Length: 157
Image 1 (cartoon, helix red, strand yellow):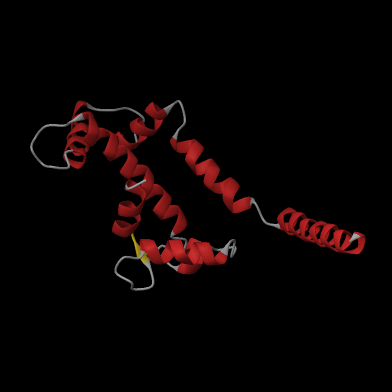
Image 2 (tube, one colour; image 1 turned 90 degrees about the vertical axis):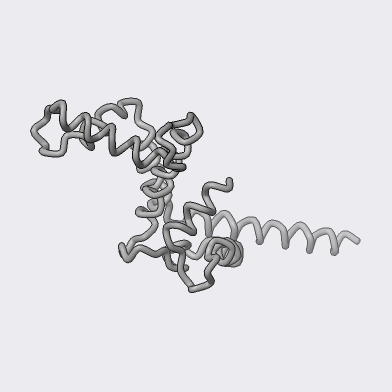
């Protein structure tokens, strides 16, 4: 009885030691980079980002026309049902989709407009689970995730 207990405890200890060791060696830089991208998008000074987007000629000031064009563009993109009115939900969805597109662009490391299985899980972490999720997102089963598939997956969360 004591021998069986010793073997069980010893096996658990060895498993734990290997797990902790593997996690300690794991490269955390991609996650930290992604966190930085997310934090940047959620920065309290979003006005600076919007200003830079609206300042088309990059002269560090907004003309009336630049601001009008920026708001018209925003309205046209956010008006999902194209009924010439914006609902609160359309604005929420617009910002949500914008963030999803930024995440897609971040994950598309070769900038070909698709996320490959390697780009989806570059470190091979929890490979089977990642393959299952990849197959779930890849609805047209072409072996890559396009932006529309990625948005559809993220919007259902």
